[in-house]
Image (cartoon, rainbow, N blue to C red; front, side, top):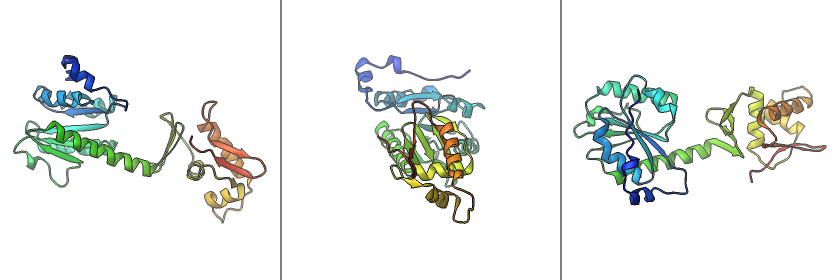
Length: 248
């Protein structure tokens, strides 16, 4: 049974009003051994506009976290759990995700983490909510800068250049290597018209001796996989070639 601390309902009305924000509310999970001890920190984060849950360590902790994926994970290091177990948990979390991780270090627990621990930041007790929020926002900003540099987006389509993954409205699309390379090239140059010969040169290479019908076949397959009546990304320019439409 998952035990979750959620004290939002007992916050004062004025505090709940402070939480209203036009941006998407960020979701935080605090992993702690004694969840009641962090009630004050939880309240402070909720008042400042975060969705926040506190869950205890257990064998299914990774599965619990990804049942409703958060935007960041805060991990308490207070001596109740062996430091080696906490390091293994954080290492496993980083293996399967790119979620920012902040260690909450109880007084005297600086030895609980070292240079090999894969945390993005840490805070020592007594925990200052304002300082913690600044650290969280800094990590979100860094993640957004990295994501912007490593992704191409257009109307529900997302190309993750770091993972070589393509999604449409969050659903993963399976592409062959050439389909992915063709899509990446077109989407990386939106609005620009490319002849079939130019696409053969850029995607297949100058040593390719097949006909330009290969481009048409791959374009058709790409459209079948990524397009729908609601999403049209690749435009045909008659008697010339193709272009990827600009994001408007």
